[in-house]
Image (cartoon, rainbow, N blue to C red):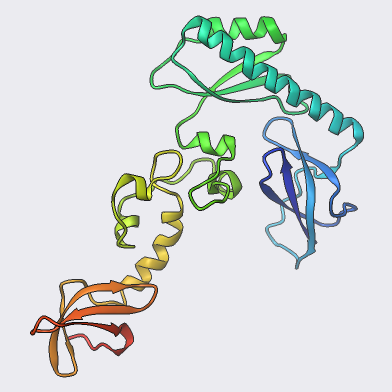
Length: 266
């Protein structure tokens, strides 16, 4: 069996396929199945792996022909045109809609327009306008604010493509909610701008780190707790879970930085 990494065009995110065997080589253009239609990408790497008992096929991954690439490029041009036409129609109809992106995948007879809206919108007239222009089935798909960066493959505050566009969308249909407790356990500032992602909601990466910080937290004394150190009672006033250090204050008001492993709880 082989693991094939494919860089999706034009989003540039990498998706992975497990195949029994393949005739693809690195830098080959290839096509693969999507929920609706087909996607296009370029092979980034091919790596042999041990047999996978959960093997479920490679979603029809195969080498792209020149016709596939040409059709994909033509549909991209239609997507761009559809986006501009939709913006004009939305403005003309004065609809309270924010258009995000359009999708017209290879093999589909339907153009999907993704949008956000703060309220329920009657877009039946808009659908008729668009269908008259493109002579195709039109689907208006409302998404939430957390879905917008995923569709646009936005760049996160870390400088990388947002996680929801890279791999979270492949693991589950719906993103998990993130609670403030995930920020509190890291002793982060709860100011919204510090812990929010580009979508305006709490960052998904807080959830990834939560289990690690929660496990470390159990090995440390609580802030405000009185413990015993070198036959003296000291109060814990701070801690760094990753560095494994604890700041304590003596009865005389002096503060010291200690290693957590050297402390003995009272």
